[in-house]
Image (cartoon, rainbow, N blue to C red):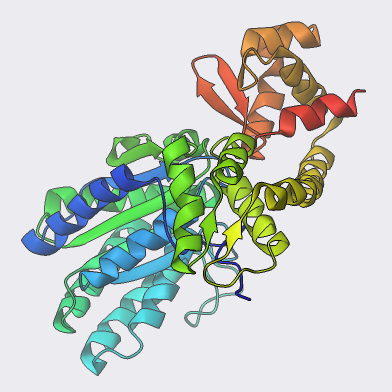
Length: 385
């Protein structure tokens, strides 16, 4: 009896099907560490929930640390503004560094917190407002430079900031980040530092609204896994435990999950349990997958229902119209959705934007939209039955 090697809803132990992305990022990390140079553009990998953005970002963190780089991880959208959240994590990472280095960092960290509008970092009034003009950017830039300097004094090869859920960052923080990196390109090209981030599909629009010079960001879209990558994602974890998959069982899971990593992990985890948590030499069979399908259906129904309940009446009408308008069970045109709703295409913009923000739908091409989770269209149709 062995525990399941699959991780639905958790950070994956192995990042499968992202070879191209990891190779690109690895080249940038090598450029930074071997040449001691700034990674000039902030890379942002985007995609709907469940496609493995956080897992990819954690793999980037492992790669960077293996190269001797100090990494700082933040999840945007918490209680702190983005700049302050980064400063807080730098404080944590530098807690064991030399006293001289720590002293310089603490001074700059307090200045960043002050300019970002975080009370309690100095003897100031009851209310603190974010700094105006370039003060916030100047303080944050100084923090990055001082952190890299201190990290190198400690024997590290540079600094990498990792920002998850970047679409939830405060606009001032996004602007501060963009301005800082623009300034560093001009003033400190020999500073070994970089930023990698992950966010939902609407992230480019959000960043553009916060920073007009968002060409400093390099966006990449994470797609669903192909059939071969899905096969590896199923076979590799089981193989590590000495367990195999029957070919027809593999084919069934791949067909049912449509390359969506979360559903794939859910199926595999349920099939592993149905197979009795197999010992080395065991095999997951088609009967295990067929039984797992019922458990997966219950789990997905609960997920779908929560998302449906989170939509307003107007947004539900949009979802229903979109489910009806799907041309290939993957995408629907904005014009067809508007026609199904009996409205002008411009009149559905607010519902479209809100549903994208909620992660229920995503842009699939010019004028096209898709549901972010396989099977949701069928659930939506059932609500109208």
